[in-house]
Image (cartoon, rainbow, N blue to C red; front, side):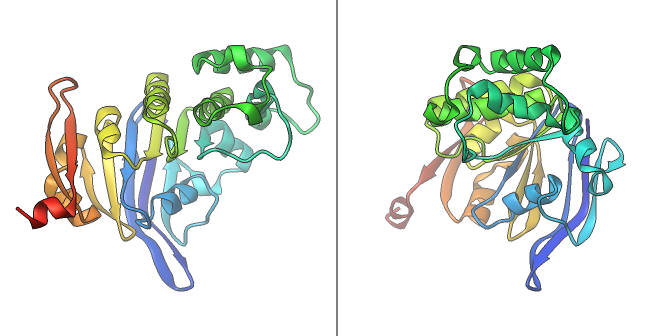
Length: 260
């Protein structure tokens, strides 16, 4: 499943929030979307998963016009995982995951044995099968995020969109969530805050600043000290981590540079 975004733009009150966005996600790739708060990452993702309607440009999913696609067809192709979702009712874990089957069923279709088998398989993939009878509301933040990924898996889509999936999680759960996603081998576009995690897990990065793509390419090529200073306004040392072989960033407080 491939995604191609071409010259995408979205405005509010005559103010351009994202402009001339061009990006691609190839089949099976894990692509990261970076940028400081207010750079347009979430707005871009909302346009891609059709929560917002762009006022310029095109989005194609496997060559088809995503913006013109019927909602059920789009949901069968693309699944979305947001930050922790508030739930109004006391659903069990397996009931939450069963919601992922909705695009494949008519309004009054009963839940089948196949549906429940898909739910069980999705929970097993995120190591949450033993929690299937638990109330979703009693889970920790990392456990809830794994359930939301399982719900996306139950959708059986081949394209995954994640909006800051590791936000508010401790480092163990951040690594666990990204390990799970990277092992799925489905085409993935994820907005991320942590540059070190992005360089470890992503095949390609796009960096946004003030609503525009200012850099793109392989993580080792994109994440440089100059770019971090220009886009984030902080000083950093960028080197290759001998343990992972990937780019590693160490940040410096302003006082360290002022006194140097």
